Length: 319
Length: 319
Image (cartoon, rainbow over all chains, first blue to last red; front, side, top):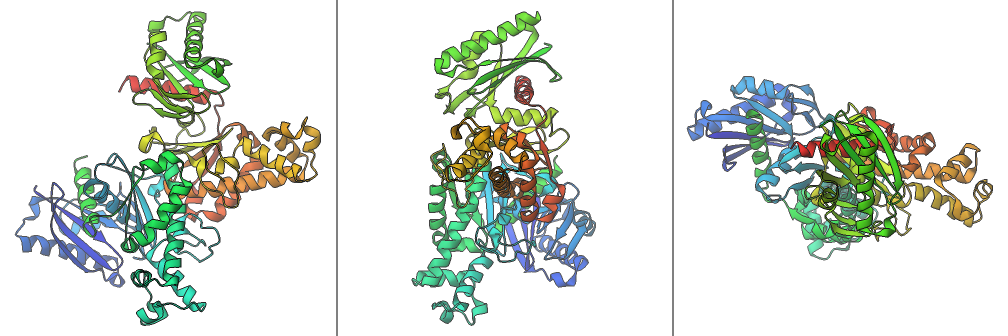
């Protein structure tokens, strides 16, 4: 039992990793999810991916202890069920059992952001801290809490939806059905949308040259425009950073993390976003919270979900 | 070892209880704290209170397993130290050791609101729920999280400061040094202050008759005025309830409690406050959070802190 398999399933790609039991990533492969093919086909693709990886490395199935998979949406990790995954169009799917039947290995699943945060807490930017709040700023915004190496689930396994705090003055419809949620602002999607809106309202911006069309504006291009001193980009980054800080003030006073680890696509904006965020935090946190708080960008990139899910599976196996 | 002692130390009164190891409160006594007499005298008062209680009930010291005490402010429960208690004027006081030296029993301490929430979670309104968020609306507003019977501490033992979320449009100075904190609105003090301000701004209210002076307005009187249909009282309760709901939306999406237990003086406002709070929650929570959430008023009153601290001490003793 020398190996573990970690899976990070996203709406676009599946990442599969071979790890040793010390959670070192020995090999990583990535393929498109092809979610339009449906549940059974996605599971078969993952099963083939695992088999190919093992064959390619000359590893026997019996030398693998367990498979862990991070899956988007609402998960029941105790029963191994995907309760609801909007972007996969899954409802009450027994993923752990079904995948286990295909690969003849024990499979354990949990929410993808929880797996990423667990990975960063154990081996990445949260290493050495007892209380870790991980947030990802991607298509949406999600969070996850790890305390003394253990995930905090909350009722119904629903803790961590920090992206659905209200932002005053915002009314953009969120995928959740509400309006003005923090993730409509503090996410890669939010950054791109806010820049597009300002340009559509007539603001002059270098983004009109950088992007093939207004629809083609991305958070990465907003970062590029920011570095050229573009006023739309600077305004958007400052606003998003401040609103992110505003939301985190609630979270920090409530759960008092030692460290906040920020990942996801929009984390590449780095200081452009973190500077206004820190200013908001310093102004809005009671002093001892601000003084002890560490803020870190994620360190493990794609590996975070693999490390987290592999370690999750290994622990559950030995429970 | 048939008995436990629970202490709930407040800035005004100390409550002391004799409990059996099933956490039943057999006897409760209350005396003024006399905090102006200073640390040593307050501890001696508590020690005498415990001795008198045991003598009065004919119980020998050796039949008491442990003493638990809930203390305001920032506590290190692992070392038994009061790190900071603003209203007691204590800093880094080794309360557990000092009290233990006086009564020759093991003493364990923790923050008073955590003890109250633990008591409600084990024996009160949170009984039977896995994830409990307790909040107290008193002089200030504080919260505490109990998960599967265990307190959630956060970094530096500082989790739970839900009273210091920002309220948009508010700028009243908070005791913490910031402005516009939720507890300046959502507390007994906040309800009284907001009513006073409206009257001082010239609003006509039955409160001018009910209270001896504008300064004498209390949250209880605002409730009384509310029941007479007073427009200032109705406006204040609606506003406070909505802002409380707004703050709780952040907390609920982040930690997903099964039940919120509301205690403290302002909880006596009951539905006057809970109705607008629920309306705000229903409008601002993602549907599954709203559908599964239970909201309860505290059930144990003064006993909550005694049950919580006694059970806390009993567990720590057996750790």
